[in-house]
Image 1 (cartoon, rainbow, N blue to C red):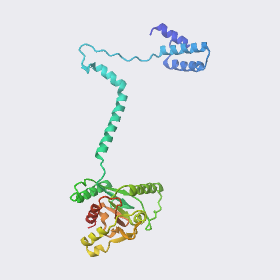
Image 2: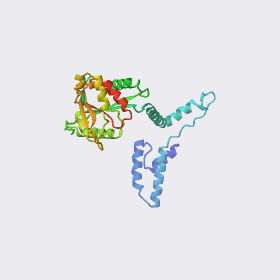
Image 3: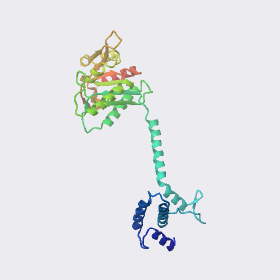
Length: 301
């Protein structure tokens, strides 16, 4: 830009030749505020001259037009300098695209690897770890692996087992215990109701209070076959410690054995859990009750 053009632009803004960038910015803002709402032709013309002067004093940078020079190393027909310039102006777009692609790949891998369990167990109750230094995740992983180890010889399709634990405290009559964290309790209650009504759990382990609550709402599978086999595998003194819990299912004239209180057998010791009395049941929507009976027989025996 020639000195004459700069001098003219400064004169339009009513600034001296030595005006700094900050002075130009402040003067421009002042003049724009003065004329921007004016509607008469003279004011509009003045505003146009002010904008032109400001543009002259603050020209927009012109992108470099990279040209291939003889002897330059070319990549896909373009010089290395061209690609450096291209990456500089598109780096944020490339990063966003890369993040989006990584997220899509993550979703695909998750859907492929996160297969549903072949045998599902639900634990509902207020229990705690015997040793707080132990890792609950590690204990549950080992437990799930042991379930697969027991069931796979009976059914080779059993390749994955799951154990879900919902921490809910119940009184002996089935009512919820009072708690200071009501929101946590309500969230777990909604989770338990949703899972019990929709999920096809094969085995459901309940505290005695939780059983009292859910047995009144759910027709659990009859445990007579399990009790019959336990009478063979357990010693009489041990079997006497198992409490049989019965329920009168809807639309049935007979009383069914829908729960076994196995607290005296201490099966939760395998999970390093302790706390409330434990009742075992078979899920009302289980499609593999024979496997459920077989696993409970092994676990309790």
